[in-house]
Amino acid sequence: ERYGKCKAKLVNFEHGMSKIEMTIYEGKNREIRKMFESVGKNVCFLKRIKIGDLRLSGLNRGEVRKLTKEEVYYLQNV
Image (cartoon, rainbow, N blue to C red; front, side, top):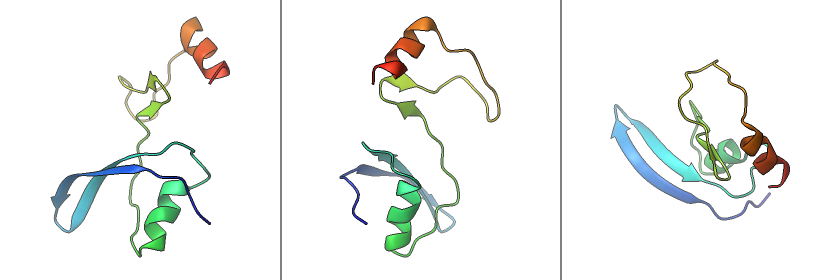
């Protein structure tokens, strides 16, 4: 299966592990994992930091917060 273009940036390489920041534009099911699998690499951890213009910052793993009215409107109209 082919996926759309993405941007990838090597952020860190330490102890044989690479930390890569990726930007994708479609978000198909398991897209990043499948991309890495196609070149023989495993993904150990993924963290979503942004959806469109909505940044997902300020929360620890497992925490939640209510969206503002503006955020809900934005997501309904993406």
